Image (cartoon, rainbow, N blue to C red):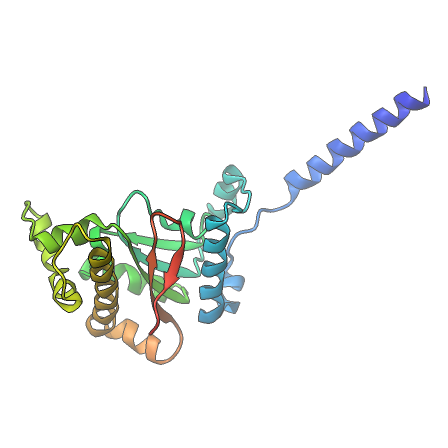
Length: 228
């Protein structure tokens, strides 16, 4: 009898703890947490997230509850201009959840008016950090090195040509060359963001927001942030 009572008590305790867990509100970005975060803290959060991802130690998330928790609004702390490469999904490689980051993706992480407008919006609504994220083995970079021409892609690849010249190499079969051009392309995009958006330049100069460059290694899952 005592054994049965003990088992019943344990079952009830387990059910109660599950009910409490279900009632707990999932962790999401709020207007208050966004406002309290500094650009340096935003950067550290991304670094910590990528370290978890690379170590196969990502946070467990209840995505369905995250959907409900973010339905009424979003307050991302960072915006990432990244390549469209399917191996480098922004939220996953930085181990972030719904409502945490704005992901602006285009082949070769190049800058145009649409991307700039998206980043300006991110700044306007409180984002503290802009990251330009390139990656190893980038197909767009290889295409630019080889001078590929293909419909509307031709103009996009032309935007990467200054990075090819800056890297001083022209071998798309060389991993080192492709990575060097990709890094130069990240720096070029960073320069264009500041030069072509007076709105962002003003907030960057005021320290309201920070702009950094980074490279994602598709072979290791690690992000390396570039020195200024």
